[in-house]
Length: 248
Image 1: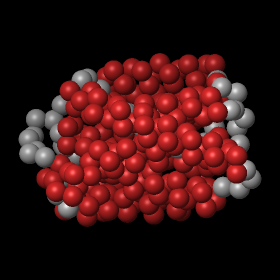
Image 2: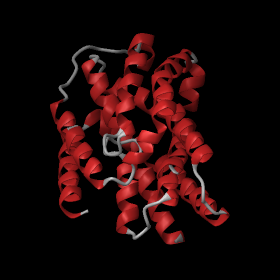
Image 3: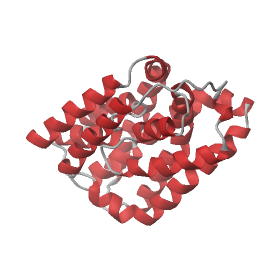
């Protein structure tokens, strides 16, 4: 089980910050590895994400401390997501592990990425996002409660609709992920039951692995997301979604 958790940690670290849905990949990887659907796989698919998010904290710490006004905007962006998460928790749990929902969501998100058009308007940096835009991005992020939609994908599409350049929305998406994923992990820990001490130890191990992998790759993925066509991720999602619907 240690090897399987190691693989889950690597998958999380590689997929948290790109628009392919890390939750969907964790659930699907768990299924492929033969981990039974249940409390453990659901808990690990949510809690292990906190490792990758701590990598984001480490990476963006100096930026946030230098521009503290970003903290308020991230909080405003998190408000709609946090409220919806608390209200919709039972519904969210019912989606986890449903391969049909995951497959359809992957395809829908993939089509959305294919439709994103480049934004010509210039932002100097992420500080220029307004509180109103931050709030709307938080609203759009609620869609990522459905496994397969992708939090990063939802914010990229939402940011595009708000006419925010991709390099800016990518950075804000990374920052908004910090309270979102940490909050989701805290809620999951409060509600989960039947997890043994040994299983929590495995989740902690996977979380450490996801932190290390995310920290090593976060700069690379930032460059990919801001410089390369999002259609790469769109077609990947569509292909994976079709595979899920047909074979899983």
